Structure formats: C-alpha cells, structure tokens
Image (tube, rainbow, N blue to C red):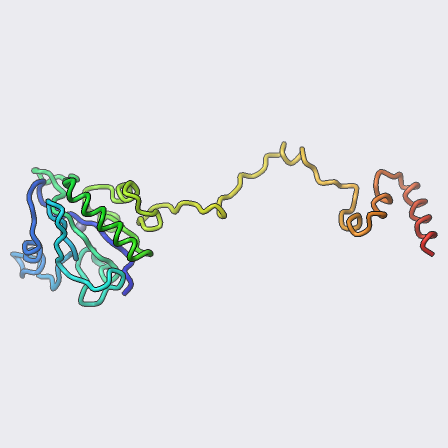
Length: 220
Ligand SMILES: [Zn+2]
C-alpha cells in the first residue's frame, strides 16, 4: 500500500532513560503478561537519547508499505502508515512531557524532512491526532511547521492558499457607484459601427427619429 501517514510516537518512558530496540521488541512481541503478544513491533524506527536512529522493522521503499513491513502503531491505519518513536515522553512521575534531547530533535527533524522529500504525498502526524492519547507529548503540527515541513505534508494543517485561489473581497457599494456602466449606449451596436453611436447619444426622441430617417434616406 502507498504510505499515507508518517506518525510520530514516544515510548512513554521517563526522561533520561534510554530505550533499546531489543526492549521495544520484547514489550510488543513477547507473549502476555510480559509483553503484548503482537506479531510485529509498533514502530519502524527508534530514536535513542543520543539521536541514533535504530531500525526496528526495516523497509525497502519509504513510500510503499509491503505487507511484511506493517508495524502496529495506530490500530486501523497501520497498513498505510510508517511509525517512528523517540525514547522518552514522560517525566519522573510519568506525566506527559516533551523530553526530546537536542540530539533526538535534530535526528527526528532530519528524518522527517528526508521522508517528506522521498514521499511527497505523505501526511505527518502525532499519534494523539488519531487516538485520545498524550503520545508523542508535544504538538506535532506546530513543531513540523517550525522545522519547515510544507503544510500539505502536515496532518490537519490548513493548506496555504495558492495565489489563484485567493478570493478578492467583495466591492463595497461606494466603489460600485463611483464607476457605473455607461447606460445610454447599447455597447454592442456602438462598437460594431461608430456612426451609430451618434444616433443613440444624448438625443431627444424626436431628434433621434429625424437622424434615423436621414441616415436611412442616405443609404437608399
Ligand atoms: Zn504512540
């Protein structure tokens, strides 16, 4: 399937605690109660505290999700989504917190910008835009805009209006009155034959018929 979404997650582990790919694999794929018993991990990539990007589930082409590359990040849209997770996301009391280290921010930024370049139709989102969760513990839309992701690639962002689609404000009545259409000359007739203009312009009805009669008489 074509990749529709790139979704950002956090591991929901306390600030400062590093997480390895091996741990995530155990949490997700070990049989309960130790793990969740999933066949596949939840994410394709993990960003460690030092910014290293670890591959949890490899893929060939970022834009095409093969059935054996599907990861379990957000139920219902996994077949069209790639998932990336950073280690962290909660404080010591397990409350949601953007705990990304500057190295993690830099790695995530480079990864997202590169992904968008490779998959120009992808929509990047935070997990909490699909589920009622705090994950990834920061406002993905706002951050994506800050790092220069085009708004067409930011899930839920309003597209920037293109010049041709900007709607002009309606004219106020004053503007319309200042520039009235000329009403005394039937434009089509006047344009076809400049001589006819004289017949219609500023004449009394009697003068009009006299002139009309004269012009008809001349042409006979
Ligand atoms: Zn998540």
